[in-house]
Structure formats: structure tokens, C-alpha cells
Image (tube, rainbow, N blue to C red):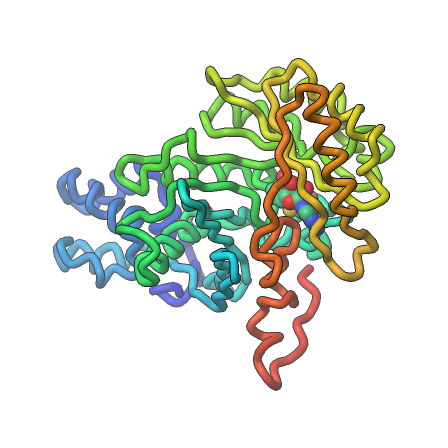
Length: 377
Ligand code: SAH
Ligand code: SF4
């Protein structure tokens, strides 16, 4: 919810405190004549404790809070829907200050608690097997909206007794709705906030950004951050990948893998290659052999993701025996590969099933008498 009733209005745009970088918060606080430690306090309220309003920031002088309220907004995602899976997965549908819906998925494991984060409302890339891809792109998420998914999740997990405060989450994966590298500036700003010691202070070793293959931006990500890279490969020939992922026509497999080879890798790191197994499309032994050849020589790990059904898209899941055979071929070729567990399928929270608008999690669809959700674009 927006404290100040929405962005802007007539005249100059008001900044959203949640989206400001550390240096911008410092400059704002200095301009208001306050001491530097007040900026640190403010940042900790915004990004460590996930304060939803200035009123919560009780150790900031009232005058400073009033001055901030006059000059800036403070937006917070509102929890619209919470769905809990039998396997412990939780999917949240958040409502932005302008009524858009985005989703995050919490996946607890014994040694880690991971949040799958969205970077955009919808996605412009249009992969033919992905529910988010069918929505088109409504808009980019702001840095504050990207970071606030983490804050809202942490706060809720504490309420649910899922961990100690202020930060139960240990890992972040940017594998939710949207193509993170298509919204690179905001992604980078959000990462800066999430990895900052005055925020939730995630380690870059515990943060993974997944891309469908925006080659020039992959280079920037490698130069400007130290987070881990995942690449959605999903096919082994250009003809096949062109048909599944339109982005391949712009940056074909050869260029994508060249960018992977050039990606600055820390010692012991690997690139994760995601490969959605589509029954009868890309799941043959020949595909497995080609995949092994493509990633040969790269510090790579292959994540096989059996297709999660999205009715109406015209694909089907591979037979379990096919998944096993495909996996075995990769292992036989000395490729590190795992079959990804399908978490949260019962609540449409699995890979490629996120589509808050009009999907199973759409609160307007759930509400009796609500108008049918319209198209997004
Ligand atoms: N846009 C980025 C980040 C989203 S990650 C990217 O594509 O990499 C989402 C992952 O889920 C991708 O690896 C994608 O290939 C996979 N995926 C999409 N639709 C799927 C489906 N129906 N079943 C299984 N995996 C799917
Ligand atoms: Fe977008 Fe990734 Fe889905 Fe492709 S797989 S449409 S890039 S979210």
C-alpha cells in the first residue's frame, strides 16, 4: 500500500523510499539536516526489518519522519493471496500499489530456505511453454518491489514460526515471473539493497539470477555483480530453440554459450543450465547427447525440469522413464545433472506456472461476482 496515496500526482515525481539506493538515502537524510547514522537507521527499517510505514520507525525523530512523508512515498506490497502446498511450499500473490499482481514462491529445505522472486509483471520473452510468457509484459517491477517480496516473505515467515527473525530466508533465486535481465537496472538496484550489510545482507553465493539468454546483459551482470548465473537453455538445436524461445532468433545457442564461456566465474562456481523436458519435443536420447556436447568444457550443472502442465499451451510432461533415461545419458557423459523436484504443483507454484493475473491465484477470479480478469496488455 502506498502511504502517500500513489506515485507522483501533478508535478515532480515523488521518490519511493523503498527504491532508493543507499547513497540516495544518505543524500536525502543529509539534505534534511540530519546526521549520517539516521540514513543507516532508515535503511535498516526499510530493508532489514521491512517496515511497512514510517510510523513503525519509532526510533527516528518525529520531525524526520514528517519531513520524509512530505517528500517521498513508501510503497509496500500487499499480500493478496497465500497458498500453502502439502510439501511446505508457499506461494504468495502480492498486489502492487497500482493494483498489479505478482508472485513469489517459498521453498523450505532442511539446509536452506529459498525464495523464488519475480522481476516483472508478466514477461515479454514469450516462451511457448511458460504461463508467464502468455501474459505479455505489463511493466517492470521497481527496485523496491523486487526487494519488498523478500521483506514481506521474511516478515510472514516469522509470523508463521518458520524461522528466526529478522531474516529467515537464506537463498534467493530470480526465477519467478519475468526476465530479470530485461529489467536489469532495477534488478541491479534491488540486488545492491538485498546484499547490503544494512539490509538483509544476503551473500552473493546464495543468490542466483536466471535468464533466457539476453547475451549483452549477461556480460554486464558478470562484470557488475558476483551473483550466480542460471541459463534457461531448454533446447539443443537452433531450430528447436527458435520454436520454443523466440529470444533464440536474436541470440542463438552459439552466442549464448560463448557468453557463458566468457562469464567471469569465481573459483568452484558453476553455471546452472535449466532444461525443461517437454514430452516428445526435446526429451530424446539425441537431445541428451547434444546437450552433453554443448555444455562440455564449461563449469556447468544441468537442472532438468519435467514440464509442469499449463493447460492450453499444447505441451505434455515427459514419461518418468524418459526423464530417467535422459538424466542417465548426461551422467554417462560426465555431465553433472539433477532432476528438479516439482514443488508446489498443487498450488500452481512450480516453474513456469506463475501467472497471477487470471491464474488460480488471482483474487479477482476467486471473488464471487468479480468481473472476469481482462487481458494484461
Ligand atoms: N525468465 C527467466 C527467469 C524465470 S525462470 C528464465 O526464463 O530463465 C523460470 C524457469 O522455469 C525457466 O528455466 C523456464 O525454462 C522454466 N519453465 C518455464 N515454463 C515451464 C514449465 N511449464 N514447466 C517447467 N519449467 C518451466
Ligand atoms: Fe519469460 Fe522465463 Fe517464462 Fe521465458 S521462461 S516467458 S523468459 S519467464
